[in-house]
Image (tube, rainbow, N blue to C red; front, side):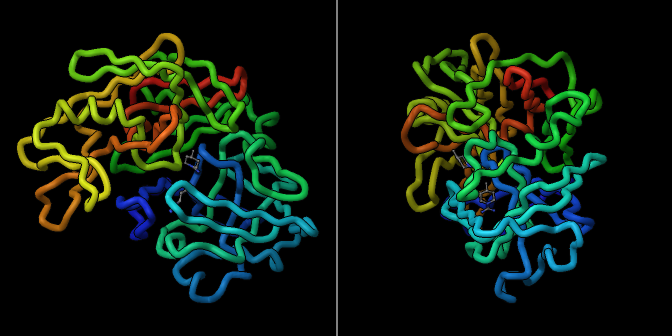
Length: 330
Ligand SMILES: CC1CCN(C(=N)N)CC1
Ligand SMILES: CC1CCN(C(=N)N)CC1
């Protein structure tokens, strides 16, 4: 599992960090971005223009004897950072680790936005609930939905340590990837996400309530994105922090800043504490004077997004039995 900084300049001003997983689609190796915030498995295909294919592994259905066209089916997806892709659909055998799924819907991109060309990924593998898969006229299932009956347990876990290679464990928990005992929160899959109640948070020794708020556990988002009241309360504890329009979010002086921890409530009981040191994402400008925070605003609404910054601190357990989300410190 390779951690990559892609060089894309998506709508959001920070580089999309991706943890790419090398998988086989009918024996053709591809590096896919495993995304628990979406439900489409799509790949760079030979129907893309030559300029888009440069530097990528391309899936060529014509050289796969097991590929079948899903005639008349289309897909189209747009992501929160303004990137997007679309194309046609077929089925093939998709193998991850030791598990093969035959007749898995594989969505072939014949159009992709520029940020994907410069990314290190050769496509995405959606791991949210299949209810938000974009294939029409017949919605398709995620690889995990198709695989879970043949796994020893219907679960997968994300191990995404900071600045290191990570892993996705399918069907079992790898005790080498976490410490202590996992705690669990019930998941509400109404919106198709691994969504849990997230009704309070703690920063600087104060507990703040977030009535009616939820959080989605999203490996496809780089940062932690919370509602404005929480982001303001957090950076109020950081001297010199400003919400910079020009730099596209909350920044603070790189020198001399010790960021506070952020504890977010997941489910009815437990808090997950993200250490402050994981909340310094990267220098915001070439001079390296200002640093860009790992906590940024989600914009409006009451749905917070706990992205890779969360998984840099916690092993994330996505359990279809429930469904429920479990976590334990790395
Ligand atoms: C709610 C949004 C979170 C980011 N997304 C994603 N990881 N694919 C899109 C949905
Ligand atoms: C969830 C996806 C958002 C878009 N991505 C990107 N621009 N590299 C990939 C992950």
